Amino acid sequence: MKKSGALLVCCSLLLPAADIESQYRDVSKKIIEAALADQEGLDRLQYLCDRIGHRLSGSESLEKAIQWSAAEMKKAGLTNVQTPPVKVPHWVRGNEYATMLAPTVKKLPMLGLGMSVGTPPEGITADVVTVASFDELAALGKEKVQGKIVLFDPVWEGYGQTVIYRATGASRAAELGAVGVLVRSMTGRSLATPHTGGLNYIAGVAKIPAAAITVEDAALIHRLAKGGVPVKVKLMMEAKTLPDADSHNVMGEIRGSEKPEEVVVLGGHIDSWDIGQGANDDGSGVIAAFQAVALLQKLGLKPKRTIRVVFWVNEENGGAGGRAYRAMLGDAAKNHVAAIEMDGGAEKPLGFGYGTGGAQRRRTTANAPATPVKATSAASFQRAVDIGKLLSGIGGGQMTPGGGGADIAPLLAAGVPGFGVQTGGGHYNDWHHTDSDTFDKIVPSEFRANVASLAVLSFVLADMPERIGDIE
Image (cartoon, rainbow, N blue to C red; front, side, top):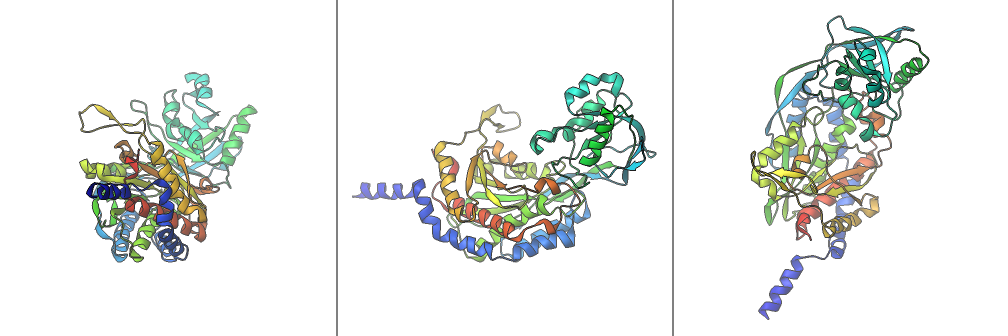
């Protein structure tokens, strides 16, 4: 009898995936109803956008946002609220402009790329050579590129495929002697709006100034070039990088009732570029994650494991916040059950990408050999699918392979299973990294649905018997 009873208890701890939906149906319904009726999260997001504004690393407005965020977490009743220190890059845009001088005089709306160097005080005036790819650049050779400004006007194939020209175009052009770079803004649709974003200089290659111009102006210059019409542009940028600044991550939690040392972490990045309000990128992500946890607290729900919300700093131009959080954890990273990131705007939620580090590898210490990270099992993925069924009523439960995001990448590299929010994304790249990323772009019903999705997922992951990454 004792043996039979023990077996019964053991089996009850290993909840079949098919039973997840029935066990958590009622509590999920309660969470979703509360989230869809909530106004507090939208009020918090509006305050962040309208009263604090954009939040570039190293800026006073970012530190104001961090202090406000910690105070709001305490006000919501979260415990262990902390602001761990993080050193962040401090890039300053300064004044900037671009003007076409020939064949006609035309102001070119522009935004310097993040971490770009500046021009000399008098600016740079040079002829423009236009290319649609790195192959075209290479074909021109040093003779036709040296002393010129290179315009990259690639065919838009989506952000992930096209952003490489913004990221590395300056160094690729500098290798051939270019004195500056202009990049078509990273968007498929534009109303004469330039989009900024970070660049990465290649070590050992001269650093040259780089800026984004509008889709319309890039197309204009490209047409002129195809017609054999010389184009001359003046570019002036005061951009500079100052010594690293002191900043902070922000974190608060609901302590687990049975296994408090095990953690489900969710969040986004509190910093933004120095334009617009950072409403979708990523104010909506941090506030939706925070509001998800705040609602669980308000509803009095106590999961078995700890749920922690983190506002990571410096995602836009360095990733220091995500790395600092991983370093802070040390060996305790093994106690992280899952990491959830929202950093794609607050449009209608479709579901989540889910996966572990897979083929990624990690080092247990600085000098230790790399060790493989366990890939997602079919049973683990099926469990995620079953959790997603709890969100079918709001259309937010689709699970696809491959989870993660920039801020939780260090956790995934340590073997923590990751979830990345996926939305319809119909307009995100229209506003991304622009002055148009403002609170008016937030659709209240869609934002609330994201809060609901995050709250249900994080609660179930923190409460169900097994750790999702351990399911074989």
